[in-house]
Image 1 (cartoon, helix red, strand yellow):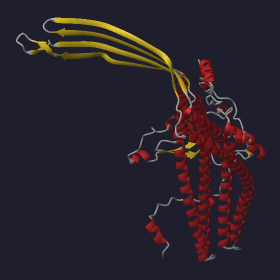
Image 2 (cartoon, rainbow, N blue to C red):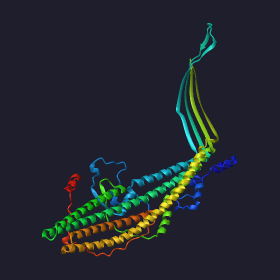
Image 3 (cartoon, helix red, strand yellow):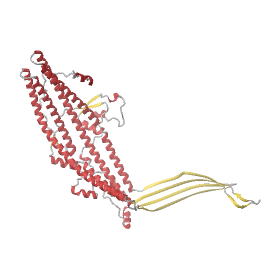
Length: 567
């Protein structure tokens, strides 16, 4: 049938605008994806704007698929219903702190994330739109039935004025006629557009939209994994900072105990006690801030993985280095270019705009269609005329018409040409956006790579700083106990140790987040795990003289707390 349509076009001297995308219903209905994402060379970009060739297709096999079910140990952490809204305080009160590993957090995010579910439904919507566009290759059949059945009742009476009656008057009233009719009407209409210049561009645009939706799903999945890993590493950061803050408070309480004991013995001044109290207040303030950030990090992670309202996640493992990034900067950049679906989306956007331009020109091109109309009618009528004349008529009729129908919008005021130019300009803009995204991708990889190198160096320097400050604090305490230095030296070394430990914790978290960013930006997973540490089997015991219990302090209202320092 398509060959006949093409022959008719050649005879008429009409060549419709064709799109080098979907050429037939069979090709259009092939929704399978090819392997790999084609890269576009800079020299071929103008050609890609003017004509259409092969477009990139999403390849879900380049990354592990998203989890769809939770293991038995995590069944109780399924997401709440999408439209559920708590209305009682007990429903949002935290009842459980659930320790989770990074793998478990990623599984929960992939199964529970509402954002990922919404993007997956957008893919199905685009697939349905593609199937709807493919349906334009097939004929349409419309059935219409009027009256199943239809009943008609009428009464007629005529008056003949030309009749001369025996009494000399004119006019005669004819008998009344009653008519009753039962009828059924049926119509079947078959339409098939043999030549429709708009059909191929619309199917091609729908196919590219479907591929773009699949790319959006892969992008959303990678972004979800990055945000989940980053949130987990941030939680580990603040957990470690809380531990540092607690150790600092314990050390300050120990220093205050020594200062008060020396003051009572008469070998220290009141100034040293005040300095120790000041350092303790400063460490408690830091610990309060660390606890605040820890709570916020926990709830942020609960938001990302969409946990039930009464459960808060915690990190099941302390912060540690995840491994070493093996690829070089150049290898990472090339892998990012070949991996990122953002570039494929701009190529698909160019193709969609080109298809829209061709569809705009199709508005002023002829459409040739085949039609077949079939009608059938059955009727049963009864006519009664006074005084006793009646007739009963039964009958049916059928009709069928077949032909070609052609429509051609000769002039539309230049609307089709203007829409064609607009879509072509949009395709050209997408090419510039492609170039901008290409530069952004390289900048993201380079920034993460440089940050990784800086964080790696910071881990080394801060680790040495922590070891040096611990020894310096130990010596300062010995000097203070021997009476050869003041409390100020102990306070300064303790503050420096806390700052060094916080910087070390931050460098570890920043390093792990940078590794997660490079995995997201490049699609590579070439991370070598660190060798296991050779640690002693027995844990070092803390001397009894240095064991300090940190008592919890009640929360004081702000107005009352501000009065404590106003005296």
